Image 1: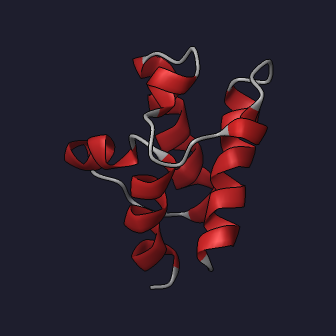
Image 2 (image 1 turned 90 degrees about the horizontal axis):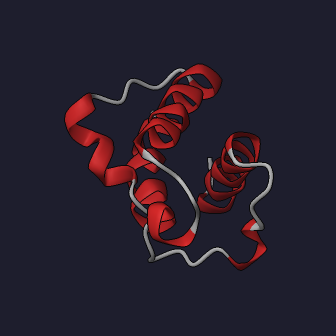
Image 3 (image 1 turned 30 degrees about the horizontal axis):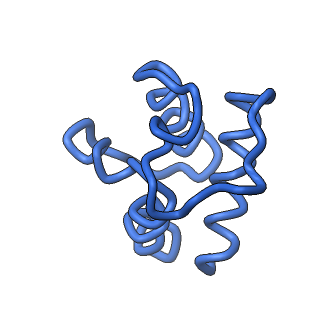
Length: 82
């Protein structure tokens, strides 16, 4: 998958988890928590949805790497292209 495809997939997941948020002005280098009203359960939902949709394994110690869009795409790209 390309970076754009991964980014679009993550935005889709974010939209499913927080349908009332506007993700059109998403800042790629700012934490999801800082930009949107998300708590730790929402972030866990993101991980679970990534695992379900793309069949990737994300160890708990790697969850902090999914903090913002840039780090999430960077983390997922090698997994999606394996």
